[in-house]
Figure 1 (cartoon, each protein chain N blue to C red):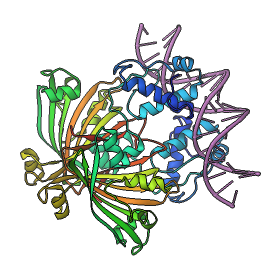
Figure 2: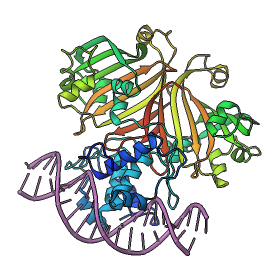
Figure 3: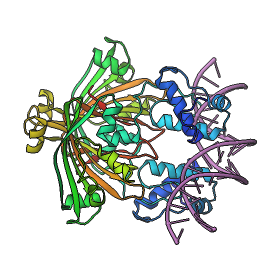
Figure 4: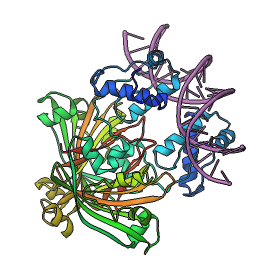
Length: 252
Length: 252
DNA sequence: CAGTGGTCTAGACCACTGA
DNA sequence: CAGTGGTCTAGACCACTGC
């Protein structure tokens, strides 16, 4: 088994190897995935890790499955790691482009009721707010409004945000994100959006509101990102075998 | 164990019971979930099903987790079954409202290049297209453009679409959907959108484009649904433990 | 250091699919 | 009817968390 990271668990290495065979085209869409028994034999492991690896690929939308029915390679989009969905910087790099940013505002102020509710802190608690225009290969793509709890935001106040990734900075101080909740809808551009994205007030924008959490469950960042339409979309792969924490919600 | 459906697998019944305890408030957000050992003892099963049930709850965003760290109940949104995300009818009912619809057009025509590509058939093959205004509790919510392959669409031609769920109809003929791919973005209303949704041309709409598949991997339905903003949003729970087939994509 | 979850093995039975 | 995946058990070792 040609494994990239020999230190990780068997099921993880197995998943990476199978994923490599799929995205490299070695196994083409429509091909039948080897049976669990074959994979057990090929890699010399028991059935547990094999099933874990296959379940992960199914969740990622790379293969199909079903009782009695042999799995088949699907023509899914290449899966992105968790970080790539959290960080504009990571996402842009992962898609082969160069991320850029221009910080419009970086301020410490007391949390208003909305921010306090989303970040699970008290109104009036100090928070740090960032307003940045994000670009990909120099093209204006998104306007980012992010609010951080003081413990995280204070680390950003003396940073040059135009040249550093916020996520990298926080990670460097031991603040990791392991969970996030996203709410996606459409909204007309307000005056601020219009000014920085170069569109008329009221023109359509794709909005992603997000709250990110640390392993111990504390909310650290609440964001309101507004994307220019036509440049960005969100893709979701969904199946009854592996239900996704995906909900169509009424207004909020 | 108070189980709703004694015929289903242990891990499924276990998940439902634990989910019930969470959504009913019996276990409040912030409470610690009993250890795997306790659950094994309480339900008299081995560790496998217990872990399967807990993994499902983690994926659904209902509980946290982590090596050595005892799981904690989160304040997540109530999870929706797979069907509820596919069918406007199911979703509306699941959220306690009454679905309605007004069919604008129901037509058989040859597939154009775009529809053929999405449905994996040849341009010129017959398809059935449906244009419907969808309402919830009588409020106009969404304009649905759906294209079906002939095998499915032919079942709809003699239906009264104003009173029946398309998904129910197809299900009744043995056409089940088990997988779907969704692409979500924002777009300005075109003339058709404007006329049926009652908004000016160019005003922001939330667009969901979707392709649905049967168990044997055939694409059956390609949809382009446009939601009025402020009434509907998409919610996604995301974690590094349980990566979600969720991708931010460049334009399409 | 005790308890917890993460991982792995070996073996078993069943339901379903497809030739 | 043979092969496949879905499910379950019993037992084991390890890494990490939190007291």
